[in-house]
Amino acid sequence: MIYTLIPVYNELENLPELAKTLFGALANKDVTFVFVDDGSSDGTPDKIKELWQGKNVHVLQNPGNQGPGYSFNSGFNFILDELKAKPQDMVITFEGDNTSDITILPIMVDLYNHGFNLILASPYAQGGGFDETNFVRKLTSFTANLLLRLWFDVKVLTLSSFYRIYSVQLLTDIRNKYGVLIKEKGFISKVEILVKAIRIKAKIIEVPMTLHSKKRKGKSKMKVMKTMMSYLRFFLKPGL
Image 1: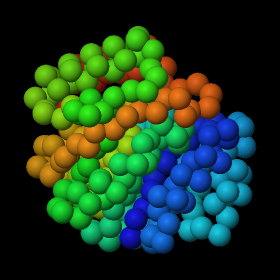
Image 2 (image 1 turned 180 degrees about the horizontal axis):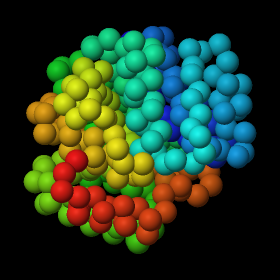
Image 3 (image 1 turned 90 degrees about the horizontal axis):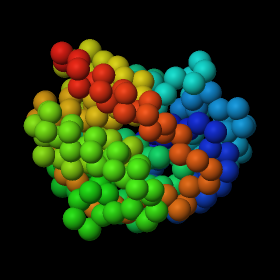
């Protein structure tokens, strides 16, 4: 079984293309789609239900705008507890704005089937890159990733990408070890769960990806200064 987990916030314009892309990539697969809406005001939840009509889809709604970390944590727990996912099942997490490179998904799934339990899509891996990202955002992302790798002594090149495959067994092991999958509410949440996975010896591999910013309609939801402050607070914490 494949579960997709996609946090969304005011993605009405991006949903038609997202539906087309995912339906094509996951055709003839046993898929359950899980969306977590983070307080959208543009009709995103209703549009999901319209576009995914007839599919196995669940739309969770946060109490207001809580952040992607909150959305991922509630989505993961819903898959584990309410949907009763099996240890061998996979959870694929995507951006909701069409920036995830769907063409590499078959490679990621193949690596999963060869025993890796956390597969990361990486614009920083050899062969990856950005199709259109302004210099400030690129520099911010590069610097944050570099500092985090040095601080936590990890070899992974991309620490904060949403686009990943997790095994349900790995998610269960992380929750059992730490009591909670994700505490952080913001974008730093993806670093948090990755560091936890590394510390319990997850089998991790990265796949080169081009981040397709050109495909996004509307602005990115990430606030650079707010995200940088959350990274700083994360550095200063005594532990996860």
